[in-house]
Length: 127
Image 1 (cartoon, rainbow, N blue to C red):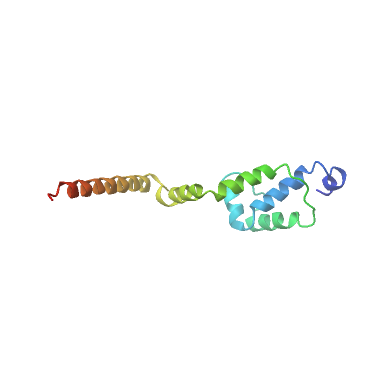
Image 2 (image 1 turned 45 degrees about the horizontal axis):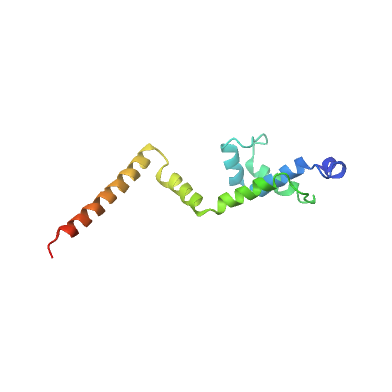
């Protein structure tokens, strides 16, 4: 990274990548998620040490214009959309496996049919 900063200041791809990873990783849970999804490979054995490494690796380097800036902006925009939070909650809570997903869909259909029956009963009452 030092070679890149001092000899190639306009092409700091490794520094920018380390800065992006520092942006993504704050805690051991973040590393757990990235390892679980296959985004990074843990060769150190301890996820906490990887989190500490990425949180301190860019502390003494002045950031340059990043080639990953657009990726970071896209991630921020994706995270800030309310629909994405709702969809993630639905998937993680109500559709974790086939049975909970089927029960959720059946409950929604039953609720809709109950509302339709209630509306039809109210309309059929003589005035």
